[in-house]
Length: 126
Image (cartoon, rainbow, N blue to C red; front, side, top):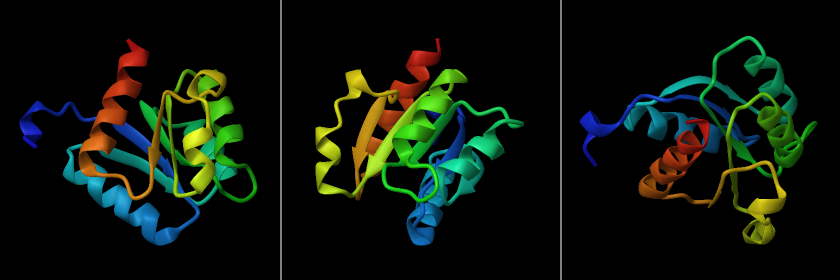
């Protein structure tokens, strides 16, 4: 993948697994994006994104305090597209048309699928 074709996107990451969260941050930065916050639950995501300009949020489905779908609803109300990610077996059954998410990824996500989901999310902002 050629980085010179990637427009940097300001991304918020929310995942309760520290290793997964750090991996996403590294992948996103390698893709040329700017991770503006990386948090462990939906409540932290909502708080940190209230004062920060975010283009896309990548949110885990299963998180403590506020789960991914509840956080996605609040983010969507703020005009921030959400990519939902999960390793849960039922994640494929989340119907995107009925939820406030623009794309869904299943862990482990490939670099290509991650970049494609970000592009999908950005397309909804235009």
